[in-house]
Length: 270
Image (cartoon, rainbow, N blue to C red; front, side, top):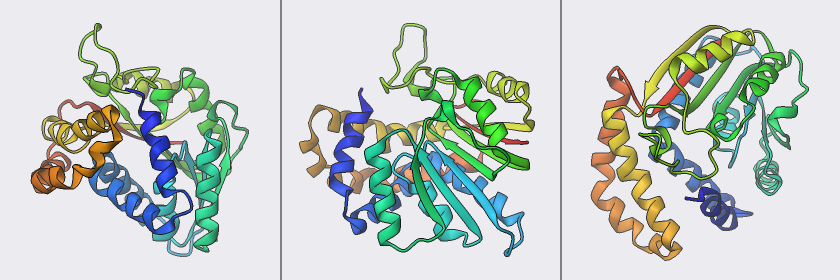
């Protein structure tokens, strides 16, 4: 499925409409299990900092900008820069942040393979990004160089245990824009350590319960929308039925220790 086509439709709907963008952000935070994991790690990071300690944040591959917005609004001691290769999306995010008067939030167009920051960021966030980039080691090197000593890197990405709905060599990625179906836990840890990261911690997300919730909350609706955007009118009825069970499954996924899963949450230090 060409997921980017659906994202472009969403761009058209929320562009210039701040209220709709905020509702969309809230929906992503609720319906995407990865957001539960990522926000938990981000909160842990900021809780380790003093309230008056200035924190420089890079949201690498920020997409719609929901994580950038969350961090800038939640943590007033942060200064957040969201970057993405999609010029239209960055333009919309920048217009949104300026119209909302969020002074500690900026956006810019950038290719992660060409980053030239050095010792600038205390936190680098990369959510649903690395599966789109062929030259991942180069990007990891750029992240490492961009970070201050002691800074933290947080990554969310599919695993090779069914991530992107790839379970065998014959399967194709559910998302056609992915250049890799997912990472092995040892693989991504090895690559990060190779470029200089330390204290690399890798955990599985989207285990048994989380994967089921993803199919109910995300996959089925996306497949329907991929066939026709007219299915959007039926989504309220669909979610009325599966919303509470889906949330319970997501909550359960975060509370159990997943021995395996289709997603990875990676935390590393410089």
